Length: 54
Image 1 (spheres, rainbow, N blue to C red):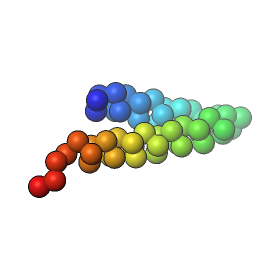
Image 2: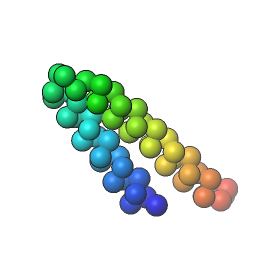
Image 3: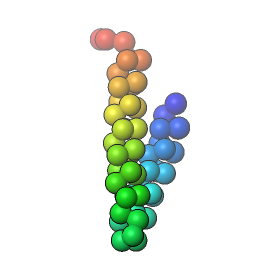
Image 4: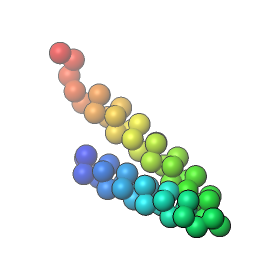
């Protein structure tokens, strides 16, 4: 599961960088940033749900 999340995070980071490099693709940077943050939050939530309380 973490492999998929890491691959998605790398993909979103690449989209964000491409969007910021090319001025006409600023919308792509915004979408990439939103997806990056969303994937990170979902990954953290799923990890906490799977980890039993100590």
